[in-house]
Length: 184
Image 1 (cartoon, one colour):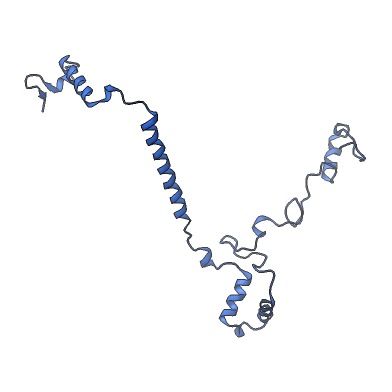
Image 2: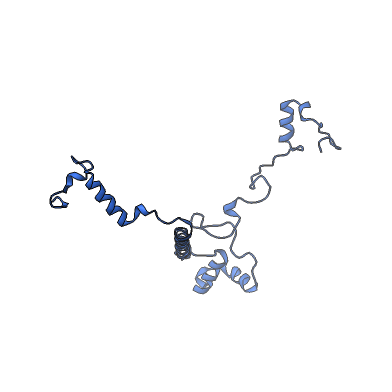
């Protein structure tokens, strides 16, 4: 790798730090990438907003036309475009526009029906989660303890009243023991 048929030393520690960084900058074995005015470090490519020919709301004028390969009819129309535009019909102007751009601003700003798909997925997952919770309650969780039944709670309340639990400010203070009903 480093020492095989190259003028670069086999051990990077042998070069001083400044010489090593100069070697990397000038394109030695550890070449990091070239920066050019054309675009990215990989070379002649273009930066992402310019890679496609589709107009977008935030970048409405792409560098490349939508149609790059023209047939004979389209080439004739492009030649006619170089003349007076008053001689062009409305259909020809629209055809020229479609050669340059994929969509108009009205078409770009048109609402999509994607929200329906998203809401469909949301409701599907809510329904699936509800089925999982129901299945867990029916088949996984143990039965409710006897202390949560209404009969047990009524007996427990009666026992607390019989024992006169918290007679000053609590439950027993609100019970009328002579009439056997709650105070009004």
